[in-house]
Image (cartoon, one colour):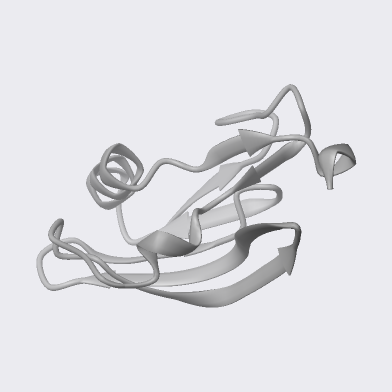
Length: 91
């Protein structure tokens, strides 16, 4: 399993780096994503767990650490479900 770190492998200048709620569930990319949707004027997902029949698992929180079964799994997930940058101060 590989590990990716906020601030080193990805970052957000406004601070927040989260998945959009629309990605929760089964996706055309083959990823099935689970996570708790937070709401406060805006909706977002911090911690998530994603599985794919070919690539395996990607899980974590883009504001901390994300783990993946392989670099290929992470790149496929990230290219199909990139996190959104936004500012927690805007809510």
